[in-house]
Image (tube, rainbow, N blue to C red; front, side, top):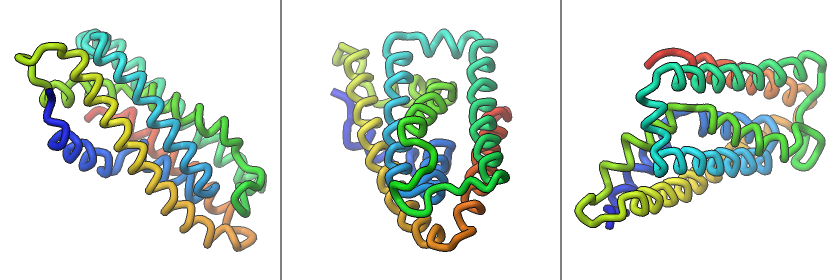
Length: 207
């Protein structure tokens, strides 16, 4: 059996480190409320299932060995985040404020969920992270390596959702304070748009 508790500690440390996923959840929660943040958290956590399957089935190794495939996913993910940022900034420029209170019209929750899933799936760095990180906690001599990797991935997904949800609740509470002011939601919308574009640029840059 893999070292679950040691893996959990390492996974929590890595999840808390600033990255596109938790920054997106933070920004979405501030801009639109805790429900939107929680939906984004669920979307990013769901997207991790895709990377888990790639790692367990061996497709991640193909991506790593074939740089054009890696870069294609990398630039597609960066372009998608930049596109989300552009859409958000355009809404702000048009004076379309995001929710002034939770449940008010904003970006539909279903759209937020699938945007988060797709943004996570289009990040090849997550795939490479899984194939580099998971094997370090697998005991090859115990056999059933794919099953061990799957178990570790499920633990990672569960703890990621818990941490992302905590970020969403915190950011939603902070955002609720600012959204009580009439013009605040427009500024929060602009902040979110700039953050998404910044995340896209960061994803496109080489390590």
